[in-house]
Image 1 (tube, rainbow, N blue to C red):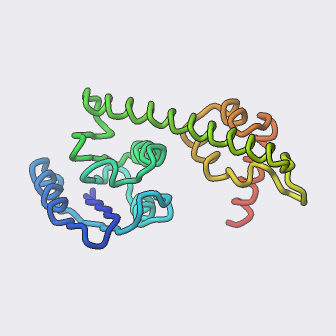
Image 2 (cartoon, rainbow, N blue to C red):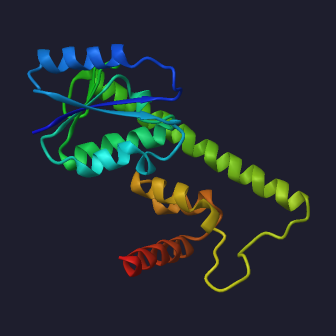
Length: 204
């Protein structure tokens, strides 16, 4: 078992010493052993998979422990925070967030409430994504811009939404809702996902 302390700051002059001390005190009180710190100075809006956090999560295995000062240090997107919570649960990694008194592996009221609230906010984010998409399509239509499938072999109107679609699918959002959100049929959505999977396999 290894214990990691992850600290992200968005500005170069933000002090991290208090966060380190809080994490060390928590680890000592819970007998979690020595803590290895991973610090990252980057905007939380950047996809966690493309940051140090993504590499850290890839390297961690079952029974490892990850401690963060607060959940907002993981990412600025609620959807990404939920992705990390789900990923750590799937890999058997215990995630502690000190500010919220949150642990992904227990069934305490605090943790249950936190996950419920984040799931609700993520649903609101998905609805906002849907609203912004519809507004953008309406605006383009009003400007006389032709909508629909882009010309060219292998092109899809879903290409520009690839990252968001994959996030929603990974979170378990029903394909029917994802298809409706991006103005396509369920069949086209499956074809689009199959194309991505085929491209990924061919690159391996």
